[in-house]
Image 1 (cartoon, rainbow, N blue to C red):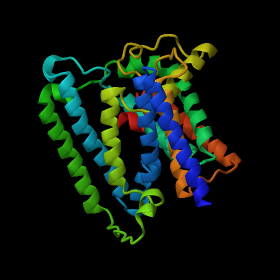
Image 2 (cartoon, helix red, strand yellow):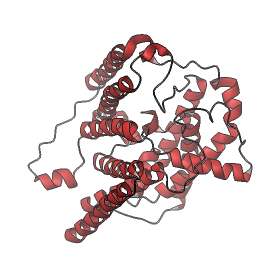
Image 3 (cartoon, rainbow, N blue to C red):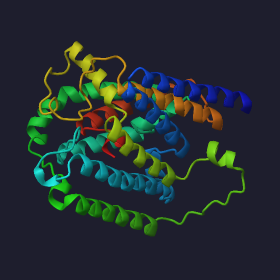
Image 4 (spheres, rainbow, N blue to C red):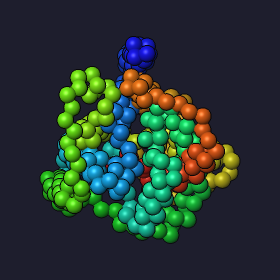
Length: 350
């Protein structure tokens, strides 16, 4: 019944709020904010179905560009927000230095291969890593195996990294546009490129009917899918706030760190990863503490997405089939290798 679903959801969200309050009271401001940001992110992902594969599939199969427009809005809002933060932390972008916890991803064949692997992993498993996390809260039978596969894919990435880095990545160009164009020029260039892509999507996609709803606000907010541009805008703001107060937004940091510990223990990965161990903001550092910012963020994401799905009547757990297990593991391995080699999953790269 709806009232029981509401009661459980509210109790869970209240528990998250009390946990955030308790962490802040113990001087753990970063952990407290990570919990809040993770809960917001989980609700937004679940309510707006902010899934990269789903958005591309809507456009490719049905000519519906609205999901991709949501991604473009997230990029535009994030670009503006990050420019403000970068400018406050590093007023002179031409100095050759970078803002704290920032790095430039080398652009080359390794990045192309990582993107192709990650995209194939999405197609096989049915989602990207962040979507598997919020679908874990929906009771997806595939998501647990996709996440296990992702950890295995990270381990495979560590095993192959040094050879790839020395042969391809180390010589790839790393260009930070603000250094050459200034903050204003780089932001204008980014927004112009995004506007051009959005125009092309709208111009050459099939026109989609705008639904006219006379339903109550409750259903629009808690049951129906939110417009993709609203989800994208919130993701852009959240990414900016997370980077300002805690660290760059991402969902694979903990998977990568724990997978590296396991790979080192099993002897399947080198102890030193060339060019990676000294990279700021690295997603694959070995974790000393059990309770880290990313653990709290990811846990809150899953819990809040469960609360949102339960309220909407979209929590539908099912026993996995052999095919779902196989697709989850196979796709997850490709997701993990792609995220490790490309230095970020879809959300981290966004």
